[in-house]
Picture 1 (tube, rainbow, N blue to C red):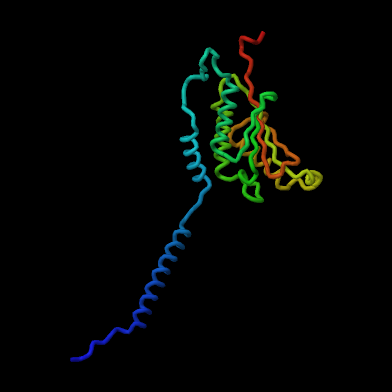
Picture 2: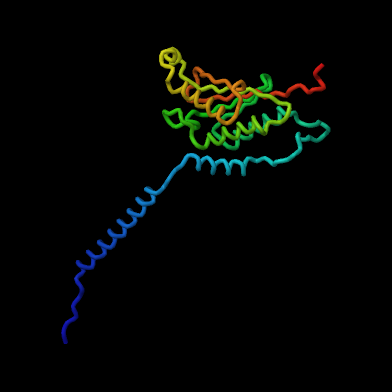
Length: 223
């Protein structure tokens, strides 16, 4: 009876290695193809983030012009309502922003890390904050309560020691970023007389938005 021949273990091992390498090459080619066909478009990112922001902005749309309070306190003024909506917008959408409300000066201050708004070493706005600023423009524009007015001041922080060189090199990063903010809001329909931009010495790495919202005198109060 002829003896059974055992398969060569070396040949079987080589076949397994070749099959494994072929599988890895196929996976690598697949991921290279996915990367090649991927398209990251700024406008599509803005639309997606805007849709999510509108769906989860925490507000219930209503035709009632004022929010009624209990205990006979009467309606909240339009300026107070708008200020609270702006505060909630930043608190819910940009958690790293510091929001302070000054009753003494009647203004809302929002401090945002510069890298949260702009790409590193660029004057170009990121996609997420662009959608937030668009939402803010709508709150101050078509969604603003009647008989209210506002002013918006945008300040880009700079190193205090760098102020002396700005006069000779006005095209440095901080002034360019301030200009980008102004043009972005203007592009969204905000009147130029409501906007002001500037630099904030000693606050490098921060952008400060100062909003002063006020109620206009009613027609009956004018004599």
